[in-house]
Length: 202
Image (cartoon, rainbow, N blue to C red; front, top):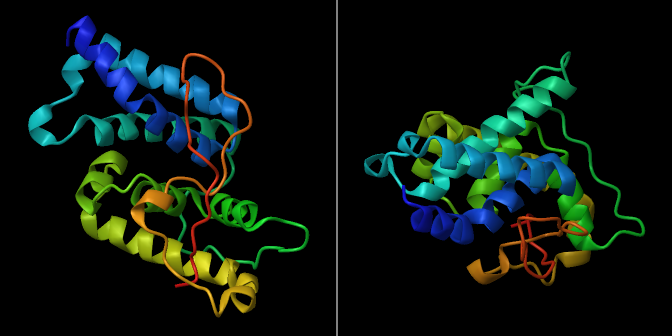
């Protein structure tokens, strides 16, 4: 990979990498650190990326995911990563904007469900691309994604009475962000767009 190719890759994918890391970590500082590590890994070992196996973005998401898991394990040494026995709890809707409620619900998902949901719904990756990023079979991704969506519907059940007459699935242009980080540090700039709401009760 030449310097120009690396610069082009950085400009094209830096915001997506940051968004994914931020939604997984819920920390702008941690997301920025991880984003920097992702591109340093690409710069140091560009040969790890094999274009014949897929696009660059899912590959970068895979590096991001591994760094997120490493941090999660370091910070939650006694918690299990398995998500099959996760029990949902409805989120509180008092004095909160819908965008914040949705973001809170996404953050409340088990890590393995959260990552596939973010990659599918916000970054719009295919099941095959997600499987590559998270190093799992497509069937496993489908199962986790199904559980994530079902859990979100249960968690966001308190919102349903407020939206029974106006529920609709946002178009692709409105999928990007349910909430955005406050403040961005270098070198990742111009990250998530305007805060937007995604409806999960469909």
